[in-house]
Length: 152
Image 1 (cartoon, helix red, strand yellow):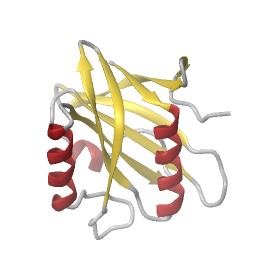
Image 2: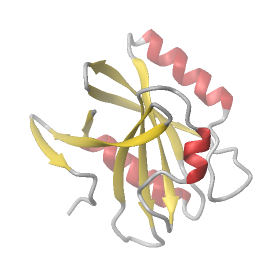
Image 3: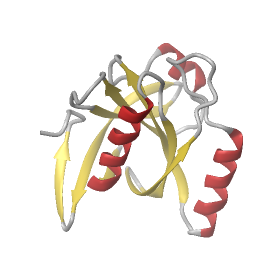
Image 4: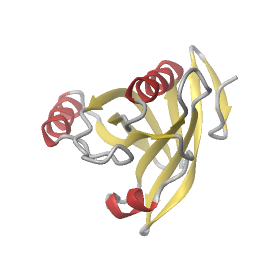
């Protein structure tokens, strides 16, 4: 699976991850799918109502509001994003436990305190496991391919 993500959306995820530190940020990704390619068009930041700082749980009201908006736009929710403060940009055991929607994209932003680079990686949940997904950051009319590593 490949996710085409506008550069400004990637920057927004990075900014949200830094702002939420030491808690996890979270949100949903609006877009469309075409075969093995997904295109992200908008982010729907959500309140994290998880009690533990190293978990995320999207507020149901925010999830329903995002669903309503994407339907009005003729799109769908293609994935979610969240951060792993002081963690790795890979799914955790609790992420796997909370996953369930087939072919749903998961973007994970690994953050550290301060202005350290944010590492962003994408995964697709399929057949009860997370598989790596390619992130292609769209910059204007150009496309820059990323393997999920931090921007330079």
